Length: 82
Image (cartoon, rainbow, N blue to C red; front, side, top):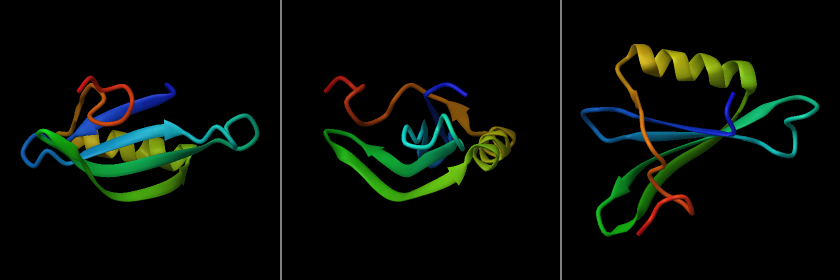
């Protein structure tokens, strides 16, 4: 799994950010999944954060892709140009 990945629902704009938990990755890999929605000219509306085991995060990623979610560029945080 890449260090970070983003998926977005095409109709609602709901977005999920998947990122490695650096404190656990080398021993027992866990992933943080942030859910939110980017807003124009405002900080993103972050709704939830959950910590999933790597296998569960991969399953969620695949399920969302099957439901029509699409990979997107980062939508919030330090990787986004204002």
